[in-house]
Image 1 (tube, helix red, strand yellow):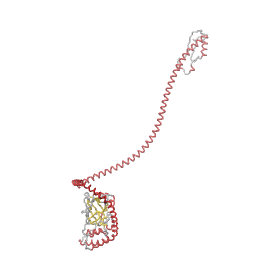
Image 2: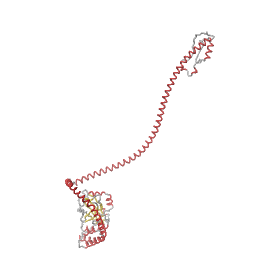
Image 3: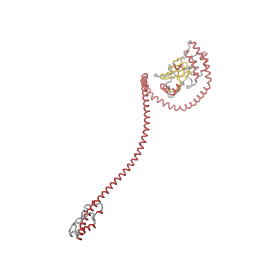
Image 4: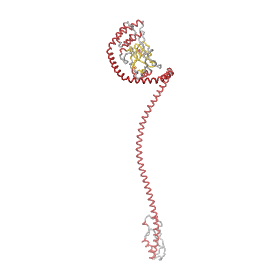
Length: 454
């Protein structure tokens, strides 16, 4: 009410039941809850509602997508489905020529119903939710849903005159705006509220004939098109008759086969009828749980986004570490090559060391043998010195007791020493003497030149 009062072009509002998804309407159609929920959940519906595109007419136009707005009178502002399956809506009555006619009829005591306008496939008298195109509601008399009679609330004050005065106002409004009615359906609704002998009825009838005559050529074109379609369809029907005969026999067999099963299933379904009140309560509970789960899912989605951001950062760090590891691996490979080279050199050094030890051992053995030889030679030299001294002393008659011989005494010095002792000693062929400081151990000599030779 407050929203409508802010719109100068709105002269009243309708509010109430528009349809019922739980029943078959008077046209024999089932517009189920699934159809309405599909409509209300679509983005097209939300966009059209917010832009005020669900414009209704006085009576249904022939084309569901009609945009002949000069015959429009209402605009839908809100619509939804209740838990009990009823469709509730709100509509503004707009101050157009047709809207003023509607207002005049309401002032005269007429109550309008409301009816769905749309198009879609019908399967077994049920509207297909996937193909249904919703185009709004129109004001009608004799609505398809018996209770689809919304309550009208006026914005501007109605006349307080008697019904006769109201009727005169209606007649005046009709006569003034009769040329604004451009559809036969709208004229029929208005015309139904007048007596056939009235002047207003005659004016409306004349307007209807004028509309029909002006649209005669269009209707002729439509008829010609329909005739062509009929001829083409007849040819296709002839082609399909043979197939139809075959299918008929198959269908009869199938119906006979499954009729018993169908009857059994139907009895079971009737015995297991749904308690819609309990279902509504369960739906409300489940809806609350669903909202809770949605909130949890949203929180988890947020945590997942944060975790993904964290993973992205870790991936960057991981790439850095991998580069460092790759560089470290290269360094390790270089060091491994150096270690392998050092190890090879070490093994070679060990082998050389073993060879050196073996050669040193061989040299030690050679030195031992040489020392043994030196000892043998030294002993032989000592014997030769004694023999030489005895022979020489005997030869010259010298005394060996006064002769001193050391390891540095040469042969010349030995001869001189023996010659010098010849005058003071007697000659003796058997006198023995020994050399002083004879080398006892060959290890004391560092050079063979120091050994006394004969």
